[in-house]
Image 1 (spheres, rainbow, N blue to C red):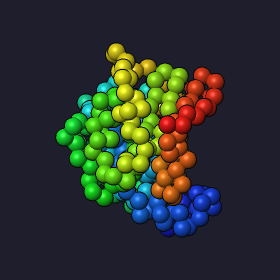
Image 2 (cartoon, rainbow, N blue to C red):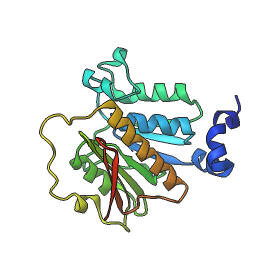
Image 3 (cartoon, helix red, strand yellow):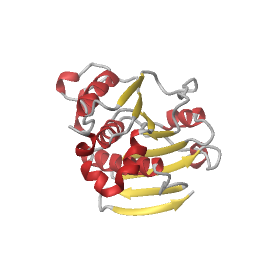
Image 4 (cartoon, one colour):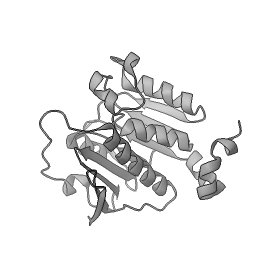
Length: 223
């Protein structure tokens, strides 16, 4: 099957040149859980050239309500190996590289990455991820808790730091409440912004999108 046929519907939307931009792009997805699993899948289906996946977790039963790459037979296995297998079954043209490590103060971002999707579930790791970014890199931050989600794009060296914007944020005690529908919706917004950024037209640069999942109200906050 030709690439043109595979991507026909989206080429009708954004054209051959942008499809080629996607095919030449490299993106790091940090955290392959409720947000990251779907972000990775949608980018793979869209024809991203190369994906780096960073996570050190194993699949557990509570993951299955929203982490769409995994199923019951995967329980107990490391997320990254299963994720790469499923993604390459979806689109074998996408190169998938694995970073099986916890994102902390020693985390290093490969030099060929300039766009990072923050799909993590805690601000300590998010701040460490941001600290590892090269100047000029774009960080697309996404988060969800209960009925509220948020997406924000920052450029290292030009934007205010995520660690400053969310300074003093308290991590919720225990597990974060989240539904499959909510995580999937937020992941779609993240992917849309990643693709906009690849095309050189980020829509949420220094602009926090806040989404109420209860009534689908959208609001924006300049940062």
